[in-house]
Amino acid sequence: DIAIGHILALSGISRNKSRFRRACRAKTWIEKVRAIAVVTIGILLFASVPPAIAQDALEKRFIESAKHIPVHQLDPLLPAQPLAVWLKSVAEPISEFVWEVNDCGEQTGSPADK
Image 1 (cartoon, rainbow, N blue to C red):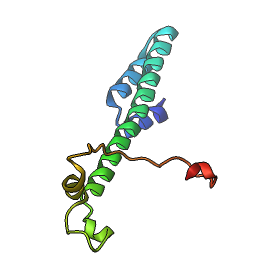
Image 2: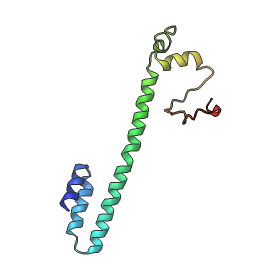
Image 3: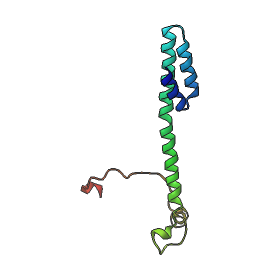
Image 4: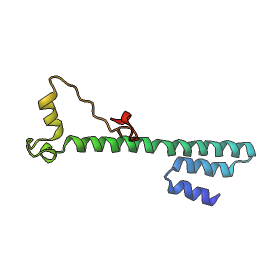
């Protein structure tokens, strides 16, 4: 009981930690099972949310970094402008941009990749 309480404390789930403590003090086994189930579900929900949020934040950082790359670093003949500004200046009247992070799919080396 103490080890699980410490794990919950270290993970920063204080509400679930207090629920776990209440579960340990519960009088009947059904109250204990119910309380432990609530804590377990809370931990699983807590564990599943941060990666998605972190992924979105990481993708936003990649996109912002790409938008600010000076195009003259890509081609010395281009002006010293950020990529987003340069793209708007040359293509905006005819194109709308949607920025995304993409791995372009897995390359197999077959003619279908070309």
